[in-house]
Length: 148
Image (tube, rainbow, N blue to C red):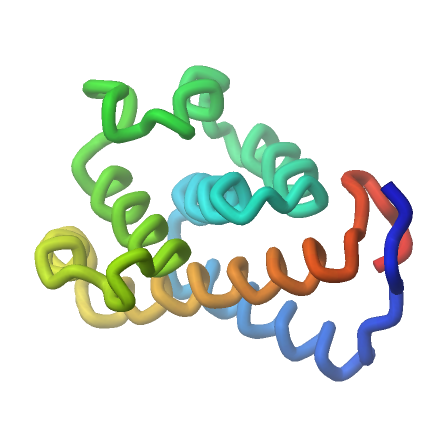
């Protein structure tokens, strides 16, 4: 695949990177942050972000079993704990928005596992990776590209 364009304003890039970094720090769980970013990237078919975040997830100690079963997390039994499952459900609901909104039950379950600060950071992380996914997919930035 050839990129349509590699241009991205440096201020936009820096702003998105800063939001993502702040969200990850505020969430306080690097492994979970990577699971969330990988799952959103799977849903959005963003090869660039998948390649990037799968590598980071491995470095953060996310198990190969979790990465292997992430596409079927809701059927993977105890491979994902309740907090991870709540975060992944929220990630899917925010990313796909098939009903045009995030269902109350999904949001409430996430709120049971995250305090207000953690939930705010989780939502910011989900929104940021979705923005990155859309920027990369629309511009057709290939996996492993060093120009983006």
